[in-house]
Image: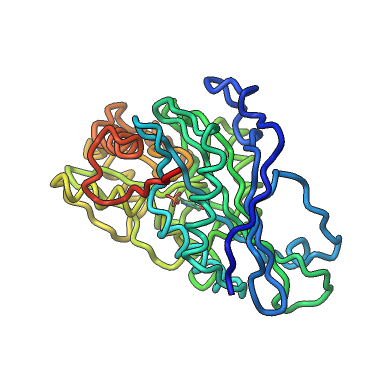
Length: 352
Ligand SMILES: *Cc1c(COP(=O)(O)O)cnc(C)c1O
């Protein structure tokens, strides 16, 4: 069914025009994109073509019914100049988890990895080499069948774009624990990386920013008590020596950075507990002086240290010492650039 990736290269690379120390975040794209269409019940010939706009019918079902999912991952470069990917099979599996939840066709996992390898190999001069910088990869799938009516679409596109980035949060971040809006509930789409989850989060996120916060801390849909996660990150606390992160309860996105941080912390001898954790418990730990650290994990940021959390009329301050969060960040960055041995077999070299 799947033929070889058909490659059409650009004539002139734009990479030489980029200042790699000052990359405009989220607006810079590499020369090429990977593209594969689904029609007549199967994925068609996969292609890599120069990045360009795609003509889309105004009735494309993704616009109306929201069948749109995505992934986020990073390619880095090791000291020999070899591009490397971080656990790409995990992203392939999660894309298909999201696809099933939204009634979309699964994309072959081996082709997903092959697409990333080929695109990253072709656009390797776009991978920034500075510590903490990376080539952000955005695989996504959407329904592009022109049809008005509520059912699963029969035509889709799977695309991978690549965007170089410098480190995102250098500062510690401020979170606002939202008590009016929710991100996800059990049985909903919170476990899927669905574009619609973000649509629901935009208004509360803009409101939190207007109050001086960086992102929303989401609480559970029933009681606004159990901590779920942050806008684009999972969350970890260190309380009285133990690392606690909310258990995946069906409404939390299973972050690959989260899973990696848990494995890394346990390997280093930390006790890591995945369980229900309420905002009241965090407030109490803070009052007793037991709240030692808080940090968020996600591909885009790596690890972001948390400065404080606004909740109703209070502000929970967190110590500005983050040895554990810092260790996780430095270890992940070190493994990603080949400076720290990859004891976990997470890295996937792209031979070019
Ligand atoms: C993508 C995402 C994360 C982080 O997942 P990673 O695989 O670590 O990048 C966390 N929360 C939400 C809502 C996300 O969409």
